[in-house]
Image (cartoon, rainbow, N blue to C red):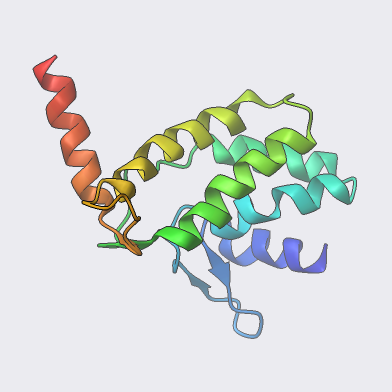
Amino acid sequence: MHSWIGYKKYAWLKDEVAPKTGYFKDTFGGWAATLVDSLDSLWLMGGVDEFENAVRAVQDIDFTTTEAGTLNLFETTIRYLGGLLGAYDLSGGKYPVLLEKATQLGEMLLSAFDTPNRMPMTRWDWMRYVVLVKCTSTQS
């Protein structure tokens, strides 16, 4: 809980907090990696109020916007997709926004597998996907 309180105080909705300086870093797309990654721990420790506060913040994460040019597919998958799905499962599906956000991100991540051999790229060009989706939706 000490680490969680420090994250809330110094880096809320940022990816990481530096423990000594209190400065934040956005090393995983700026989508609140620590927040999403901590959801299951908050639930397992019985921090329901903290969990619900974090779930409300998840609603504000916009996976279609980041300042990063490319993203690490593995880290994005385990931290965000895994964090959201794990928390959704542990909480018994009580918080549908977790599944909604996981679905949104999962659909985006599919573009990383759009390669000649279907092996995913390690660095994901997320903007290419967003542009393709916007073009497709305006043509419909």
